[in-house]
Picture 1 (spheres, one colour):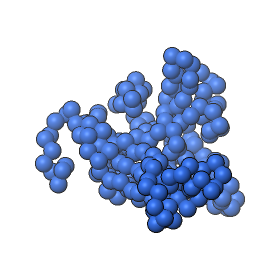
Picture 2 (cartoon, one colour):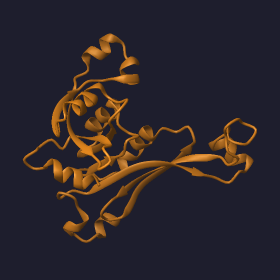
Picture 3 (cartoon, one colour):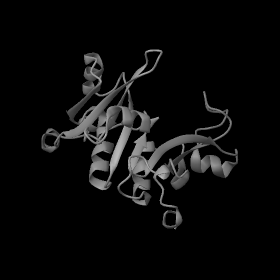
Picture 4 (cartoon, one colour):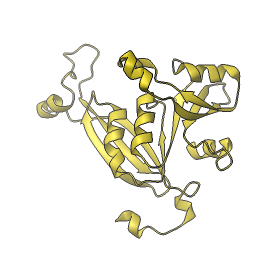
Length: 207
């Protein structure tokens, strides 16, 4: 209903599309016995290195330019941001741009979005202890590149060799980000029509 009554105006769009930020954060809860049991049973001062209050994971999809929350999940403290993003995906309007921070990049999530979301995605990925291809890209000093990204890490190890051999690499665009203090990270995206989306425009959109 909110989208039906929202004014048609370019200021609510990025490159002509709706833009959605997806993120999760831990939220501190009241320390009742029932809440502790449901959301964070390992909390409490009797557990070493744990605080008194239990916590939960709250994940939200947020329409960035309309400033409109679209979907939200609340799960226990051990919940996965990536899995919650998948659960919220059916509520996100199609033909938009999904944006994620550095806690989300994984080959499995890229593949899931390719198969289940009609639109685009944009991830910020840390520059160290990440995909080998990304570390190679950073070392090359290139500003942007399109690669074929293969399964890696825990997801690749969870598959049998026959299953792994059947999986096709994903075409992913990479854009280098470097802050004034020299911190380097990478944007990963399927916005790879470079004639339509320049790297500078994608960087501006992310920030």
